[in-house]
Length: 194
Image (cartoon, rainbow, N blue to C red; front, side, top):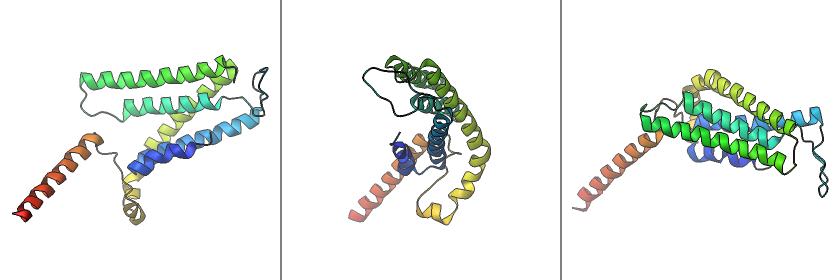
């Protein structure tokens, strides 16, 4: 997929180290897919109107989608634990099920449109899911303990790169502190104008 750099866009917007490692994992997963395709060198299914010049085993779409899905399910299950309310649990389950359904639809469409065989899609999904499981473990065990150290580097401060791992609900945290700062600046401006 030539648009992999777009997947790093959330990092450039948020500048969070975990988002960066997730994006790096996606890029590594795509490189892994490229290596597997050239190792197996299995042709795509024969279609009358299309002449393929790329290998089909494993399906890169299936591998990508299942990497993202498995990683997000693990992230939601093990990293997002804010309030432990019933509504939050329902949202987590809905999020996980919706990403899984989306991956099933993409995988099914690859076979339905005869871009891949069933085995190419299944192996792509297994490769992507396995890579996500491994990458999530590496991120949690190796990279996450290093995040505070990396966030303290001078270059990280210069580029505003941060570690949001210890903050349980980053959206609420940013909203609360931004609102407080805006209110104090408005009051200071009002005092200055008087």
